[in-house]
Length: 261
Image (cartoon, rainbow, N blue to C red; front, side):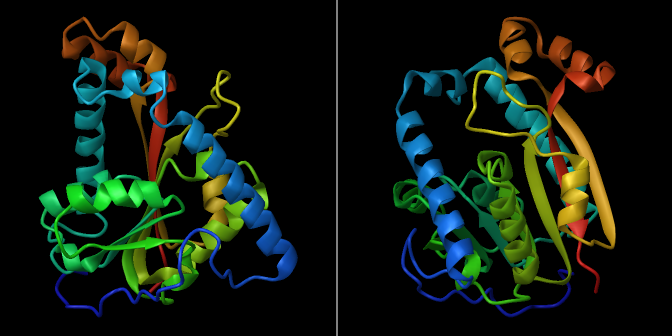
């Protein structure tokens, strides 16, 4: 895939969160209601005490990032390829840009990357932290041209969407943007969180129903956060060993599916 130099992902300026959606009025209303609900949740969460549990310097968070990078690098190298320089990639719900910065660290060209968000304040944080050239869009995927991306990713996005029809529409929009032969990537939760009613797990069967892909890969990873926090004071080998020998304790997954060429 990286041997050719593809056209850049085309991005129109459609404005921000409540910009035009290309669906009929009822579907538009459902999507807008779900987007507004998600926005309220994130506004209430940002800056709260819960953020301290995810501080970058915490030993359990450092280990989680390392585990995730290890699995992600292995999956990307065997799907998209080892040379990311010419890969056109889109990160849906990019947050503050961490996934895109990881791709850049691994050789992706910033001008080939697009980050989309529904929250402008997230993009305001992402842009100055990320290499120049990355394009940012606040709004829906309707702004992206069909068949323009080699890789389209959604990291803990689907679990934030409770409405099943909106999930399905997002999956369809991602598939539309993807080139034939390209890969869709999802990183998300395997289990529901009884303490967080604002998220819902994403199942393997649900993912398979979204995309009629030619090839799939599915890997579980990361100890459930309560367990990893409890083990944070122990050597990292303890956490890694437990994650290896007890797959049911892994709380997340990475799923990749290839669109038929």
